[in-house]
Length: 547
Ligand SMILES: Cc1cc2nc3c(=O)[nH]c(=O)nc-3n(C[C@H](O)[C@H](O)[C@H](O)COP(=O)(O)OP(=O)(O)OC[C@H]3O[C@@H](n4cnc5c(N)ncnc54)[C@H](O)[C@@H]3O)c2cc1C
Ligand code: SF4
Image (cartoon, rainbow, N blue to C red):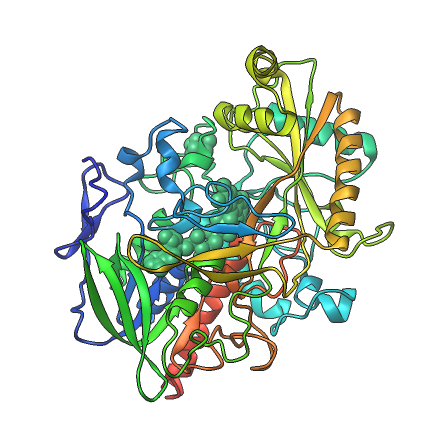
């Protein structure tokens, strides 16, 4: 069943069954002119999870996504070029001293959001990061505690059936992961060898791909196509976990539906959303609106929704919408090994060390980073080599011919939250007439000390494992912040429940809420936060206070 990029699939009371070729599941539908309880914009780690939680709590939910409703078993090719279709590729302007490369490496478009092509690493955050300012002396505190999030980590790991080690060397004691860890591939063994030589702990990665069958989904077959979308459903993305359960619980998913503006009524409350679907603008009435479009599209939508009551953008009275944008620094080190590694086999990162997340001594910087083993696909590798080493022609061919002997490491490095790193509106508009975002980013002096430290340490590690002719790549991964949560209407856009300070029935539920980013991949924490927000909303409603 070939996808027509203009024609939504979730229509006429049914949605694609992601587990059966050509199959459908029944889906409840809501008319535009009857207010639903919640209109959620975005169906990724934050929005997809929340849609499931709220529908399961009995709320009438419509969740919109600008991208398609993929059928992984039919739509996903083992072809890097074809799979570019998964990324958010709309024009965006990048600025700052260190402009962020956007697209494949940080944002997806489609039901399930960026988790459809994420690498599936699911580490928990270090408890102290939720109080980074008061316990570690940098960044800011989150308006919630580790103990508020911890139970939800367990619930999300269960939903994703995370495969992981029996004991994890870092963080508070934890129960075993739901599924057994995956065997290490050769690329991961390189990391373990280096760590053992340097005397630091390593671990099998906690990773959201199946190590044994789950219903109709097969276990991982180690073909390594994860970052271009998993065609076997072993990957436990939001598309195959929270979304089918959300639909079963009564949520409607509206695919290929781009929300362009949130309507604010005369009393200053959100009244619904204007969205573009099947060639026309429509309006969905809603009692509550949740924005979950990730760190660029969430602020962009709020800013694009400027109106008489909010001339500088909705929920932006303090001017903080779009500010404190963060990435993870993602420096990589690569080297040639004597043995054949064939690093493309299996998910890219099967081993990691969080040593520098949990060790504070001996650092000349604040924050932390984890190091994970790598396995780029050949096209991605060729682009990296051409751009980072400036090679072309026969020199490039010679370098690429060594692909099967290469190994590498990359960090997920903490970056300071700084007001100057931001999302704003450019003057230019997209084809729907919506102003496009300008994304400005520069590393701080502390961020650079962290990446310098990581570069030196990773070089030692890879050399200790037998790597030769090492070279370094500068990169970033993940987005966070841009609409951060906080303690007061002066220091943040939303409160601890994701409710915006300025509009009582407007909420945010995605990575843009993060006040700090830690040195670990963010999705598990985004989903845990979404579960908590879902429970908080249900509790507020139960008290009769959800107005
Ligand atoms: C290559 C890659 C590898 C990654 N690896 C990992 C990893 O190993 N571990 C990890 O934890 N994280 C990883 N991530 C990051 C992770 O995927 C994101 O942090 C996470 O998905 C963000 O969740 P979110 O809900 O904030 O946004 P998303 O999941 O991106 O969801 C946002 C959704 O909103 C939709 N949307 C946006 N604006 C609108 C609008 N106006 N109208 C309608 N729909 C809209 C988008 O189409 C999108 O589907 C990776 C990301 C990438 C790209
Ligand atoms: S390696 Fe496993 S998770 Fe990755 S694409 Fe293949 S089956 Fe899916």
